[in-house]
Image (cartoon, rainbow, N blue to C red):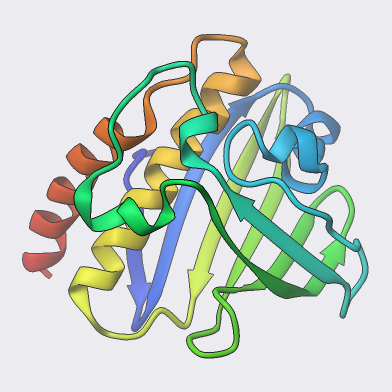
Length: 179
């Protein structure tokens, strides 16, 4: 299993991670604001189809590493967010919701499967469009966030966000140019 996300169709990214811990614990990191805020974004989530999803991103709060926000993301330095809607909810195995607001709405699906004392996470982000720069940015974002999730679940120091994101964005830009 590679840590890198793969393009599985037009505008579709897929990631797989073997995460430490039981499925119930991983589920809380997807659904509970405080736990989700340790690796992605805080915000309320109504766990039912049609339920509201609020995601409030504060990348500087994800790790103890202090890094400057890259210039192209300065407008998000003090946080950003959006609302989505739950499109599928089958606790503790499947969660899907819309992503990014109505103007450029996409959909993220998290699928969890127990694997001994670990949990396989398959994340699929659909309806991203064709633009390679967008795909590279989204792929590097998920790659970075999933790395921080793995660190948080493993009880180790969470990796820095911005420097990891920049490294991964360069890598995904190169990888996607080859496709």
